[in-house]
Length: 213
Image (cartoon, rainbow, N blue to C red):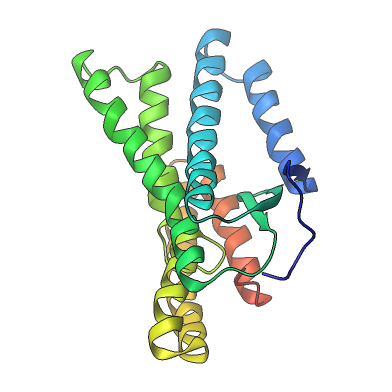
């Protein structure tokens, strides 16, 4: 990450992709299938899972004494813009904070969901699922995701940046290609798996243009 000016209160910036995602969620709440309460509950659960994931990053940054200058929202989530360069250890810990928070959230909410008989609808169901999926997807060794940043930092400080970059590009390409093929199969088979397809397409486009950050 390049150096940026220090700011006490992080600014929030949203890309066009983030605005489109928000508009899509709002459209789903207003005009989707099922009851309005059910659609609203699912949206709140997903947003809560995302907020807890990003809170995990922020808490990890605070614990590592990393000052955050801005929070940039894009189609894949949020990115922290730090005030200065991070060490490999700091970068690893900040990246790990999100998946750890998502995993803990899912683990803590799962017993409560189980005690109610695993209902297929409701806020708990959506929250557990969203937290688990969010944490799991972000652990993939893809450069633009938390898992990729963790893998790069762990390898860069042991075998060097150049080798780490090559490994990350290979693993990231393989994972995204597999995810894309699965999403295409699911889209053709089920017909309603548009979100995984769009997610994999964004990741694939970033890898093809060499964006690993």
